[in-house]
Image (cartoon, rainbow, N blue to C red; front, side, top):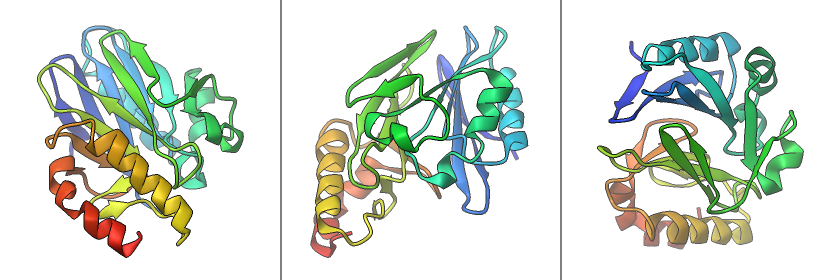
Length: 216
């Protein structure tokens, strides 16, 4: 079974699910330069190294893991982070408010709207407060495809992430998801969550009022 989920003009995107919580790990590879970004080194270092090797075949140039981008600090999203940093020497990135919970030093501290540029593509950081204080979604746009939103545990098919029945956290999260994702990106934007299957903003948009009403 192939790990390839997008073959776009300038980049490929690959995905693998790892660990006992079926965490999604995503790998972006620039076709011309070989620059790679891995989103959420969640678990299973050998599986992540295999994913990197598969991505190497997508580039005309030798590949290099430029950044390991973490969506948020929860343990199930960082279990292989230390091992992957040791194996590759890659820099790390995370949201400012989650840095203290990341198990390795964070090289790139992200705030809302920050853009990380790589040879062949950019990633935009979208701060989504509520699931954790510093949760970050990473948004990729390639010339011939839709926006791709790597949402971590902040947005799923059917609702926003777990706010543990805290109404203040829920209102923060639903507010950020609406104003920073649904109000900014088009309906064909694809949402790739930290667990489970993808969706689109268009598929979820009609249900926003229902989510608000139920409170989760």
